[in-house]
Image 1 (cartoon, protein in one colour):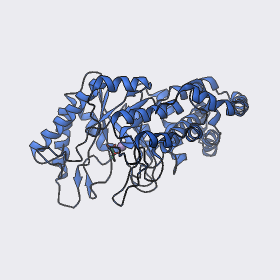
Image 2 (cartoon, helix red, strand yellow):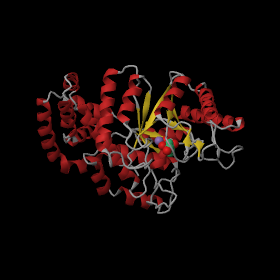
Image 3 (cartoon, helix red, strand yellow):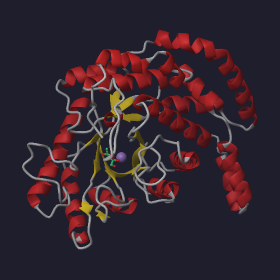
Image 4 (cartoon, protein in one colour):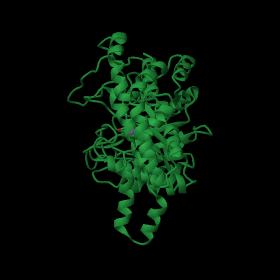
Length: 426
Ligand code: LRH
Ligand code: MN
């Protein structure tokens, strides 16, 4: 399934007049607020988010999984689905693979297929949270932290193999997330587990190509429910510092205990030059992996407000990696991802409208009320015409979801692939 530019142009024609009116109206009011509208639109067009290869089929929980039919059963079909997202949104220009769920057979063919959709390969993800059927050692009691050196060596070698796979695809970063931890008090010696993990990460870091980054992802719990070795940003941060300048902390929005101030974590990591990137999603309770911006859109805006400030004031922090990490239990995966991409662009656009100079003055004057007014003035702005204009400029759809439905993409995928294909992943 490939969506041609012409199909999108036809769909856009019906909505262009209304778009131009709302864009001109918003543009003139933003002009009065001293906003460089063209620059905001260009920043939105340049903002590319990587799509997780493991979230293109129906997700599930231990209580069940409901298929969506027409799911991608091969890596080639997964790349085509990300191609559909990129054609419609213009902002899904990369795919993030998970190994061994997505090991390419023909690297040249896979690179060419991705390139045919205008896609690059973002971070590759290792997997030492599941045992592979032919594996010599088990990760039941941990991987990089395991008390058994042979298990640690196997996990280290897996990560080095994943780097080799990424190199053949043009990827420039490795994401390590560890399920390692314990389910009961007394099961683990916390210090041994942490020091083993640090030592193992250093051995992986030693195998990192010069121009690569290592992203260390933290998570407070699940699948272990008493302790997790890399449980929070502080642990990831100290491990990244222990490894070296190419190691960074990766922030998965769902990996925080309730009411954690994630925007403050983001600002701390940026000023210390250790914010590597994001796994965008949303959650009400745990690591729900729900649609980004579907539960706490204001929190997402506050995170982007810190990102915009950091990208202006922290040259010591590299340009972060933007990735989605979600699981679709009841929504069509592609519709869910379109909604996430929209919410991410919307939060970024609103954050770009924050008058940082005015905010600085109000903060210096301790005018707390004015500080909130400045943030909420930006947040309360309907920025959708800016997102639409960015998409128009990229030749993608003014309204991606509407166009996805009117082009009957899911029905066509079912015709092509049948009803019972199942995508590898979560
Ligand atoms: C762990 C996680 C990690 C991935 C996995 C698919 O919860 O967020 O990023 O490896 O989901
Ligand atoms: Mn994640």
